Image (cartoon, rainbow, N blue to C red):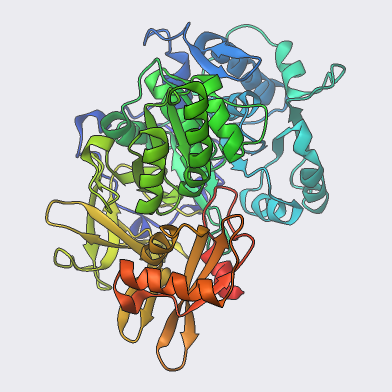
Length: 546
């Protein structure tokens, strides 16, 4: 029987009622039979010597490389600061604010190792948004990158429940109260908190593509179980891999891809000391020696010309062997553009913050053009109608998923919309073929019904992206008295292109020639930029508001 170590029951007491929880499936793979008592950081980091990787690189930046043994020593010291100096007890929430850096990774690992609940926040959030998270999570302490304190201090002033902010990545040599300085004064043994598998490891706040974010609860078992599914059976990272990417560690796509999954494989992660731009990321692919990259489709599309130019300049492709695309739909036009530039078939996947990571995917050798892939081993999935009944092959419906992870919103009535009869409904419309491949259509709230026809916004976007004038685009349904809705496109043009009536007609004709003519955009608006989240997801709801 599990014995919880979390004496602070704040999150436990705000979990959904038992009948609103998803069915968790541990019977689909033998490796999902995890022990009742486990601490995920102990398993991934403290046991590095048992796995033979203690002296291998784990965290890299342009000026620093930490082995697994060195990282474990620093994490133990930060753990001591949290417990001995700050007086935190298991189950307390700790807000984390920082970009992707070695300091942020060490802080996150120490929080979870100590049995505390990590509440990581996106670096670009402002005081009001941080205040909403503080209200929901009720953290006593925040660990904040010294360069990002201003907005958090404003939020703290309005939300005094946050009693203390401790800075890391400080460049002030005299800052004796920085997290690193306090940790440097610690020594001696510090065992990991003996958490139960069902104890809470993190609160993941959704990225807000459709409005007010929700707090998703994930346990130590959830995260370790996720390692045994997509990473083991599809990604197949190796200990000699170097991983890079743009998703923030505060986003579960980034947390898994750029910290948890590399640690599970004994690999290392490269964190740059500059903000990623498409050009900089392409350059760093060569300089860092990265073999695995994670980013969103839009970024791959923007990087493609830079990689192509560097390929010619350096006489060869970057050392990449795996390129993971997730976070939003991958247009086939983008997949082919990247393949032409890099020579690599992208590894696509769909996941959700609520499920922790990817649950439908295909390894490059199993790619079927236009499909995301098959359900990942460890999960089961089906396409259902509004009543939850499975629809025939080839029919559009809602994706329903079960596996070793599932949605638990903390104190949120929207749980009832996401979980029904034990199945997770991520809100995506799909078609499944006879071979089990899943073809993404749209977010269910982004399906456009025009004159009785169903049109998926991503399909129209993919057609538009194949036109040489279009750099980026977003498609929505616009209310229309005659047709119910019409298809409307917002297009960002490539340099030198003129957005006029002639180009509108050319783009409309191009779509009509590419896909069924009724799907063409009856309205096209040219814009300078598209609204996106910090993780690169297109915010269609903002286009609809506009």
